[in-house]
Image (cartoon, rainbow, N blue to C red; front, side, top):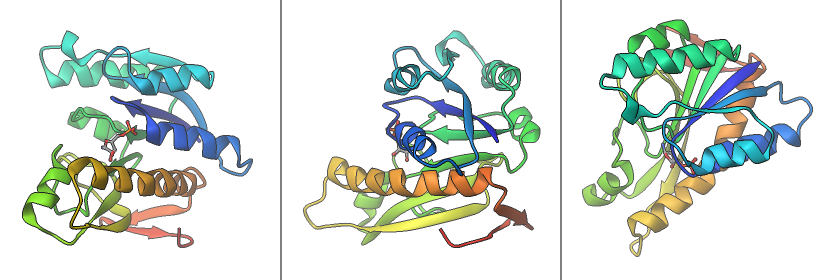
Length: 203
Ligand code: GRF
């Protein structure tokens, strides 16, 4: 499966994916494009090092989400992507992209959704005093941090945790789980019926 990976930041999830694909001949994926929503991301630098085509669609060049989304859609379609993997991508995509890739866009979010959507998920979990944080891999629908849930892992919160220490432990789990989900996705081992995800085999 030809996939495009969308990034905004350091790209640790992208790197885990690149490494997993490189070490597994049966992974079933080719990253045909890494798209960044801003210049000078670690993610785009990692992609260049790995010899993957990169493009920047700078969100600050656009006044509306719709035109930004259209530019993103043009790039991923031109690259021949059959699926999209959001890896720390901080922009909300508009319905035309979701419609063009129905249940074909994966995202990883650092909370146990539906708890704590949004870009302060780790802080919000700490502020609420929950004892289990975690991460969710889900298909993207029209709502933010929402859509059929593919996989989750819990990460216990320690009394000494800060935002950074907790996020670091969540990211360790992301880097293990997300490539496994993407592999199953690319091998056609994930199906969705009535918003419920079924996996051919447990991850
Ligand atoms: C991850 O923690 C992910 O859950 C969140 O953004 C972070 C991205 O990290 N959506 P990276 O760019 O993959 O290093």
